[in-house]
Length: 387
Image (cartoon, rainbow, N blue to C red; front, side):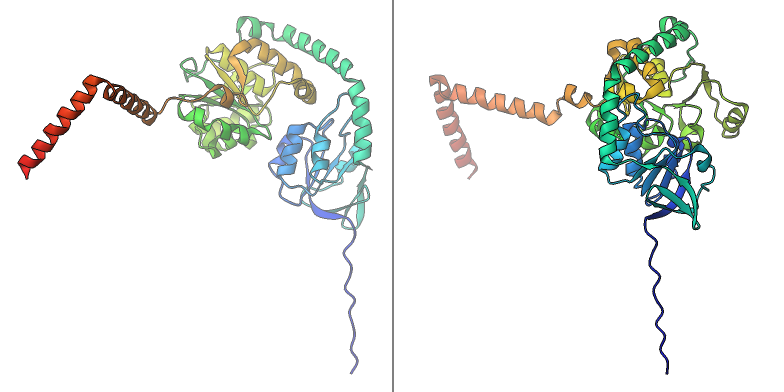
């Protein structure tokens, strides 16, 4: 009898996964599953988006644009490399069209394969190359700060009537001038920031304004969305139930006819906020202009690195913070500024301690000792009478 041994075919080298392709990284993130290979076109990937890719547990990221272009030290690539995610950038734009959404692909040595055919090739971003590019980008920061200043001036010129005179603001049905307003924007640290605000939220009547996909996070944290603010890419990211439950829906920028029809079919009447501000910043300006005594911003931050990391929206962030003034605070500082209300049991404890102190003080006086002696004798006589 002849025995044949079948050789087990060795698995091809590299990383195999399902391709998820989209030029809009914000829209792509919601479709990612663990082990997917994300194919994006995102110049100077920012830290917040990179953290969302890490949370989605992608196997690798292939970028048509450069992760670090040299304009400023973009922090997204470093986040991905620290998480052990392989990176390839500089892929030809024409090659992106060859990669089918949902196809099984394999990434090996800077090359992406699908069904045994090479569909894209780029350059691997190593830690050494990233360090060199970040060092060069830091030298360009003065130029980028000058560009940010110029962009802010131009945006102020275009939005002068809105920011200086409040013209063009939509009228809200919900009254936001009766207490604090919490503006929630999409961000990798949003969940952590909301958890840090739980004690504050329990003792405040807060109006919640959620921007785009942040509405989903707000509902998951047990918050009711009073105002939903949508950008051009946000309609598909917010469930219809959230939009219907919101007392106000605001569309930043002029909506397309198809988008208006979609909202109408959902039974949602949206107010239009025709502004060139970024969506989160438009929500901050809307809350501040409506008379909110305090506006807490969660999910988005306004330090210098974040302003540069956000590319075009940095000018919007700077102007929104200037327009809101000292009423806008970052959600990360609220737990440090707010110590909470005094609980009733704490008041009773202080009252009891004070009462004991008074009794003890009286007891050491001659009068107090006489009271104690007479009271003790009266108490014993009463007990004997009962027996």
